[in-house]
Figure: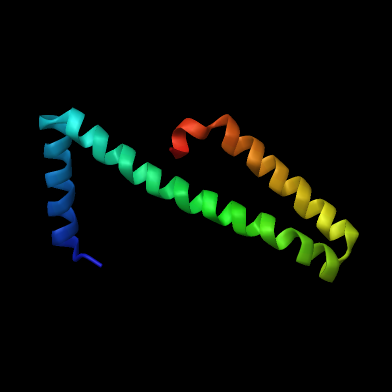
Length: 85
């Protein structure tokens, strides 16, 4: 955690960087978004792998609900895939 003074200074530096070199800042922002997307993709794969166990342990209805949620997640990730890459 940063102190309030350090946080204020960091925001000031960030604001100055954004204003002075927007192309560089956009590249950094894009990379940070990509890392977030990779974690979301990994979580999705792990949840798909857990679907059979969930169905066996919690029953067909829970498995079906789980599958519908995961299909919706996959559809949304596919629809907005440019954000996650």
